[in-house]
Image (cartoon, rainbow, N blue to C red; front, top):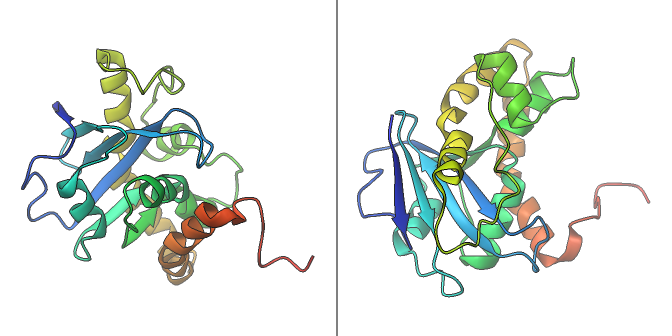
Length: 205
């Protein structure tokens, strides 16, 4: 396993031939429109992670943007709604097609309300993840070794989680429902960016 740090953009061809790539991002906070996107981490599920420290505010990253919109590559997230919205807002692209392990967990693991990445990874994969660096300064000019390791850990297990959750979704007869939710997710992110972040447009009131 190796973690690779890239400045500004992914090198060309890093994920050539991949049909799915796990993706996560790090920001200066969780408020759309206030907090900038700083880091994007990716893995093809092969044990390696590629961490991109973005150049702000230009966000000139054509290789990364091309991957995000590539229709032949499924992008795997955990709570993709936030990352997709951040990419739409700061990179100007709509990420698709996507898979979200948090949505899959909520549809498949109805016996619990613990759907965070740490909890799901612990139960389904036996992986105990550290979240110590989650709230660190991701806008710093240099990422620390601990930050790099943390960023990588968030994507290294998403392929395995997807496989386990897919088995559960099929078993419970909810795989088609999950697929419909994944297809809608970019639209939900677009609603967030446009001001409906706290509004349930499907609610009666």
